[in-house]
Image (cartoon, rainbow, N blue to C red):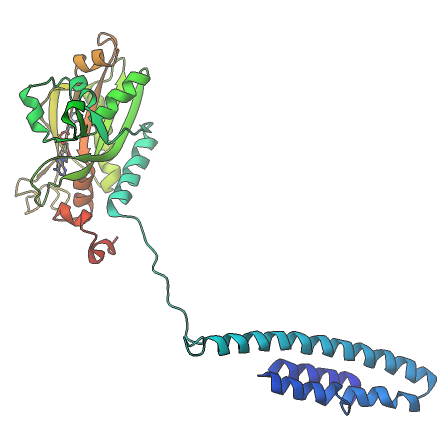
Length: 340
Ligand code: FA5
């Protein structure tokens, strides 16, 4: 066999060697005392000067290459032998590995991000405030003075010691005050954040939930601007035509105040169990910012006007995904969470 064919065959053998014993045999077959390459090198002396030089150079080159190949293969076999011997009693290294469980976003986070994206496209900035609030920001600056019956509307979790008058914020409206104190109009902000209430829970009420506060202030911002912005928001959020209606309401920090309903996204306003056969879903509270609120933030109410609104993000998520119990969001039940 010619020397190049021997090389090819040797490489094939090295490749298919399954253990160190087989590799050792291959070494002997080609490079051992009676090996095929060794035999060629020994027979050089019988060749002419010219052939001696050519064949000698080629045989030595192939010898070195095969030595390297064998050495590399030895490392590979040694390390897998080592792994197998070390762990064979503990586990079977040939079993395919388990798939890692990968987490995903919570439905409230998905909704929150979507809402932020829509409002940002309409020129609103996203701002935040603290979850532990003072009485001033949660109530007084919002025109809800101490001992005013309106405070009862927000079942408050007060923090100890009571003398400090710290509380878990009951709504995101204090974020408006904090922002207006530090910034001058015109402005457009939203504050999507967590709030807390000392309430009995049921299918649509929880003790912690998320609200989205919106605020737009300028020289001549009117309720008509509110209707335009909020209708556009709902249409983009639900990806369908949405009708809205306003009903008179009361919030100490807005005047006039209104509740806003949207036509039921489940039955398109025809009447179903979701909307209690009314065709409408109560969605948010809103109104024109009260002059007393402007004064508390250092704005002149003669120059500035605008609207504010507050909507439950959990309730938006419930409408979007047709979820019938708000408590599912906080139950950590994977059967529920894995659907998103
Ligand atoms: C407020 O909290 C006002 N700050 C909203 C507002 C802002 C009005 C700016 C005017 C101007 P209300 O208490 O109605 O309002 O709550 C607003 C929304 O939060 C409700 O429409 C509802 O979607 C949601 N919400 C209220 N209580 C709960 C609760 N316990 N669990 C889940 N969502 C709730």
